[in-house]
Every structure is written in C-alpha cells, then in structure tokens.
Length: 391
Image (cartoon, rainbow, N blue to C red):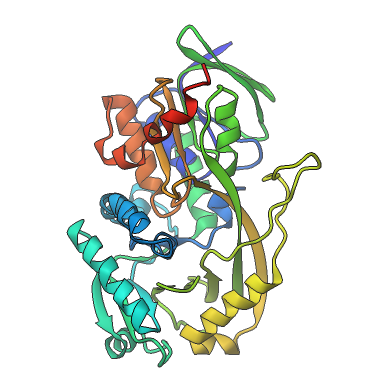
C-alpha cells in the first residue's frame, strides 16, 4: 500500500491549486479525480471574479447578507491571488481585472446596493455606489434603465478552461501524482491515517482534502460524516464573437445576471439561472448525469442581459450549457478541517472559482502551520451538530 502525506479528491481548481501548493512545499501528494481534470464545475462555469457580495446572498434577507459579509476578508485576499497567478505560473490564463459593476434598475434595488456597499466598506472591500450617469460614463454600453451601480475596480474574469489544467501541470511539475479516471470506492481511518481504495487506488495518507464539488458530500459519507452540501444545476450561455465592447464584469443586484466578454470576443451570460438535475430511478439526484435545460431560464437570462446591455440583442447565441455545482445549507462555502475527524479537510459549497486559489493556498498553509484564521467563518465546525449521532 502506497504511503503519502496528503491525498486530494477532486481535480477542479481548488484540488489542483492545493496539490501545487502542497507539493511545492515538499509534501508527497496524490490528486485523485474520478473523471478528467477540470471536468466539473471548475471547467463549466463562466469564469467570473466577483468579489462583491453576490446577489444570491442579498435576495434572502439581511441575516444571510450579513453572514456573507464574513467572507469579504477572503475576497480581499483573493484579489491579490488572482493578480499574481499568471506570474506565479508563467502562463497566460486570460485574467482580466478591469472592474465590475453590480447594477440596479429600481429605487428599492438602489437602496439594497447602498446597504451592501456599507457592509463591504466595513469589511475593507473597496466598493463605491455611483448613479446611472456615472455608471454609463464608465460603461457606455449600459442601458438607460440602470439607475445606479456598485463599482469595484478589482473585479473581472478569467478563463476557466485554462486555469485548472495549468495548475494541474504545475502540481505535477512540483512532484504531485495525478490519478484521473480513478473513482474512490472506500475510505477508512486506519492507525490515524486515511486508507483510500478504488479504481487503481490503494494508498494511505496522513491528511485528506475533499474538494470534489457536487460529489463532496458523497465522499464525506464514505467516512460516516454528514456534510450538508447539495447539487445544483445552472445555465450558462455564449454568444458569437464581436468587437471589444464590455471590459467589465456586469452583475445585477435584483435579477439573475452575470455578463462579461472573453478575450476571444464572445459574451458569456449567466447569473444563477437553474437547470433541472437528473434523477436516479430510486429517488434523489444524480450529479453524474447531464442536467436538463429549463427553457424559461434561457429566455429569462437573455432578457436580463438585453435589458442591461442592449447591444447583446444584435448577437447570435451560439451555445448554452448546464453545469453542476454544490451549495451548502447556509449558502456559504464549507472550507476547513472537520473537528471530529482531524486530518480531514473539506473545500466545497460555492465561490470556488473566485475564491478557489485562496482556499487552496490557505489550506496548504494551515496543513503546514496548523491553523487558518481567515477560513474560520467557513469552517465545517458550524455543522458539527449534524454528526452527533454518527459515531
């Protein structure tokens, strides 16, 4: 049986970035992926770097919005991580950080922007509220219907199809072993180590990081641990290429919208519109199967895009696709060591593209140094009560 320092389950951005950091620090690392590198949400998302508090936290009341403010400190760190990553890896990942605008179309939405910016300001994130005219001075392509916006000079986007494969190659170059097409079938604690078996797998590790996105809860269940992570299927859209027009990340405070233009000229349109998860014959959801597009999501998403950036109406839609990610029971990511099982770490539950580099770096540092104070608001400890009867 092979012995290593750290096993990582999940070949997405967080898993590959953590493997790179840990291997570069001298640990022996095996990264295990059931399919191919970047085949899950890390490669299917639209690549937004959204450091402002997301609309999904704002639509469910002040309590959840206040909770989301706890991760603003991580957003500040993530800005620096994304600005440095191309230099660190020596690769062009099409990182563009020319600013982002979260827009409002009604007086109620403007008030929500103002409350959001106040929260962010208290946490040290640079966001300012501007009126519609100033927003259009920054972004002339915006609709006359935009009354105000929160502007963050640090937001932007990167290429999700480029980032994770480059991280995987960096991990391999640093000495990590990468095992694709290797589905984990069992995990057990043996003598304080994690014994992992599966497709061409038979190894033990001192520490285990589960960063498997929508499959993370299933992996934790192999260790008799409840992790309240739930699969969700979302819609993304891409238009034909056009002239450079939208250098910013555009979001909406009251409607589901994210919009940005890629380095190649395509407009990517998303924002959290749902698709329908496949179901298993005996009940439950099957995150392995392709999700089904909901027509109303497609029309609603495109309507929101045209209302905010009218020139989008001139472009042909060339592709729509679905991707499966995971959200936690309280919508905050779950990142950190599991208290009742020292050595078991989890990183899942959303924001894993925007904050993924930071999650990985802080986890690698904590494994080496013993703590990660910045991750405390996201700790799995907040769900420890779920495992009180698990033995």
